[in-house]
Length: 176
Image 1 (cartoon, rainbow, N blue to C red):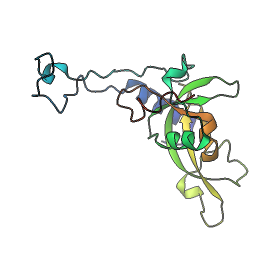
Image 2 (cartoon, rainbow, N blue to C red; image 1 turned 120 degrees about the horizontal axis):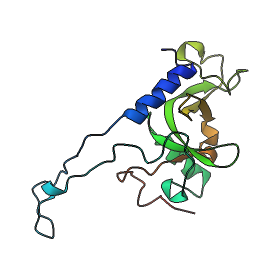
Image 3 (cartoon, rainbow, N blue to C red; image 1 turned 90 degrees about the horizontal axis):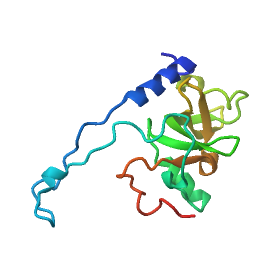
């Protein structure tokens, strides 16, 4: 599995689409009665088994993403993404499309092919190259990828509000 081939990322996209969450997640307050007299045991959380957006789908509403007023807050928000998390990427035509974070690592800024090539650890010489943290996203089911440098995270990356457990769900969801 060569991480620099389209087939690798196409398979990664299929794996993410097929991943399912457990049928139910019990709450930690199972035996505490709620205000209506029933126990929380009967009210376990039911997560969605499929992501709200398909890979490459255009955002239907700004309410589906975390939006910040300042670039610094937006960069920090994007930095919270973990591998396999869904996010929205701003495309060259201005629309926001759903993508999946495939990798995150320091990448050379001065190499001739930095825009189109994701460098492996073996290809990077930290002593002779200027490095910048970058994110590698899979943007469609064919395995096409996009590399976004940290200095552009605030402008081109927005977190997806698919999970109710998102730490910023109630506080940072809409700050326009």
